[in-house]
Image (tube, rainbow, N blue to C red; front, side):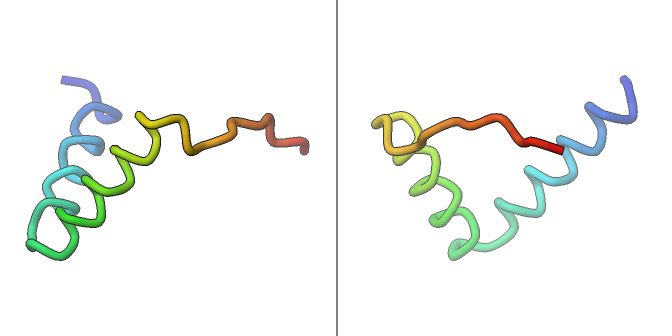
Length: 44
């Protein structure tokens, strides 16, 4: 397992560690899936 994959799993576990955090994550996912996000390039 790569370090990147491990870190992603750890972040997911953190976001699901409490009902409040999990609810906010699920709400954000539904918002994205409903097309409520405009993706833009970051200029540096």
